Each structure stands twice: as C-alpha cells, then as structure tokens.
Length: 280
Image (cartoon, rainbow, N blue to C red; front, side):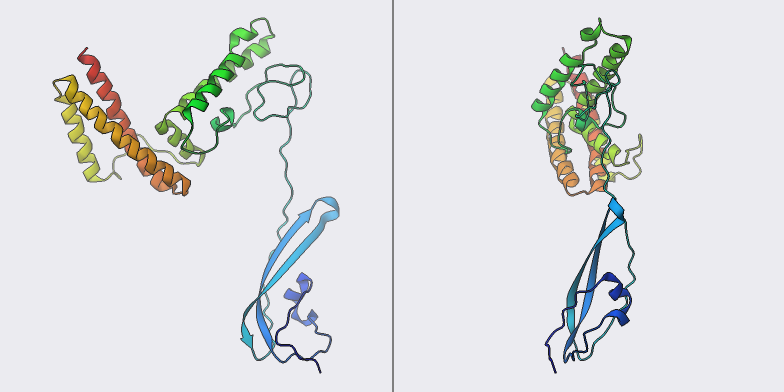
C-alpha cells in the first residue's frame, strides 16, 4: 500500500468539471489536500487548437478526499493585429503610425481618423511632458507638412497637407499647456468638465476665487496685479503636480476635480495679463 502526505494532481480540464474522471490508479491516499484551481485558456487560430493550464493550490489539509465542482467559462482569445494601410497613390503598405508620408512614393497621406494627439506628436501618454521636445516635433512636422511645399503637387496632396498641418497645430496647442492637456486626457477616457457647473465645487474654494477676483479688480498698480499673478502661478504649479499624481494613479475623478480648479486659476491668470496691459 502506498502512502502520500499530499496529493498533486495533473489532469485535463474536464477532470475538474467531472470528478468521477479523476482516478488515482487505485493507490490509497492517507492524507489529501483540498485544492483551488486556477484555469487559464488560450486559443490559436490554426485548427482551433487549445492550450490549457491548471494550477492547483493547497487550501488546507483534510482527512478525506474532497472534490469541488467549479463552474468555468471557456474564453476564446484571438490574436488581433492592426491592419496596415496602403498608400492612396502607389498602393504600397504604410509601415508607420501615423503615416505622414509614403516611404515608397513620398506622397503625403490623409490623416488617420482617431489618431491621438500624443501619437501625432510622438509623446508618451502622460500628463508630465517635455515641452521642448514637443516644440521640436511641432516645428519639424510643420516644416514637412506645410501646404506651400505641395503647391505643385496634385489637388489631393494639397488637401491632405492642409488637413495634416491643421491637425498638427491643434495637437501641439492642446498638449502644450497643462490645462488643455489634462482636459484632453480626460476626454480620451470619456470624461468632460461641463461649463458653468459650480454645484460640486468646495464653498471655501469658491470664496477664495471671489476674493482673488475682487482684489484684482481693485488693484491700482502693476505691482498689486503682479502679486496676484505670482500667487496664481503658485496655485497652478501645485495643481499641476497634484493632477500628474492623480492621473498616474488612475484616479480620474480626483484629476477631474483638480482640473476644474485649474480652469478657474487659469482664467484668473488671463485676467491678470489683461489688468497689467491696462497699466501700459
């Protein structure tokens, strides 16, 4: 008679669903363990081949063999690849995304619908960006895609260059400033900050804004207005760090609330500029 302190079972997945199929070749087991099963399945397109992996983990010793029937769902995971587009002019495949030009015939391509501004500007998808790198990318694309470069080309290329040039400009302006960048990141997640909605704002925050606006209206000298401007810049710097931290953690609601505050202070910053221009 054979004796084991523990039992390790390697079996087809159907044995987990049908315990009667699980046999021990008539070997007696003195001590068994209750196991929890973790099932991973993947599929391959060729001949619908399946690969299964079962991990059995001990959950405690028992004095008898216990079977648990698990309800499992088989999920087919198909390998998906992004289809490569072809050049509208020479029909050769386009290997870059987004594709501004065809590598074969050098023809400018139409903007790809749904391409994010981060991809267009070759930036990582994050709130904290290298704005100098962003500016270099912008200048490079504008030089390459400027409509004047295609004045002797076909009408289609002229139209595509104008569309891409406008899109690049919009992408640059959106990602350049923290506020518009953050709002765009929320938009990509399906979230928006509605205009003129103060109902959810902190009353103390609204009082602070009112006092700042009143002080700005009453400012009699450039020094007084500049002092308010410096205070506002400090607030915006703190909010930028807090928004970055919230987005890195995936805390979208917190980021949304902080961006709403940033909108107010950005508005005050513009008012300060207008006030300073009045003293000139």
